[in-house]
Image (cartoon, rainbow, N blue to C red):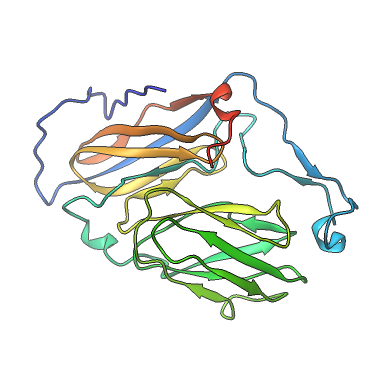
Length: 253
């Protein structure tokens, strides 16, 4: 799928120079075109799944394709630079927060998709009263497969530090409950985002100039390998990125 991005009303061009002190913020939205499917039931309340008192306490829906019915925004799309730019804004060199929480509620991971910035620690906790395991599948970092005890609160969870940036989002799974999957995008710089429930995203304080992002969703894989953006000083609202519903029918994992 080919996408042309316009920033602040200017067409992409070549040979843009930028002063190191000039920074810009991009904001946009990923929307789906075509007939939006209804949420898919994963298992109904009381279904005979493992640990049904917790895992089937209510109707549970699949979380690999979440589209807002009103805006048609697509959640859980990663937008990221494949490598760090030459300049990084001083305010972003130390990530905030220092620790990000990865929870398990009702036998589903939350958040389903998250960005892990350079210098951040992931704390794996569990709001469930049953045991889970957290099994990561990185390409470059060391894999992890650990037991998470029932009702593990923040401050008592498993700390995970991945210092090497990944080229793709890495899958996280629970081997006890095989429907549980999530994705982390580990980057060694601060220029990455994941779309919210309305398909919106923002990446602040990029160095002015031309950048090529990657756009990835678990149902397709790459939606765009070279998402070209010309960043100007200040705010840069982008045209919505349109994704055909047919492009999300596959499995890009």
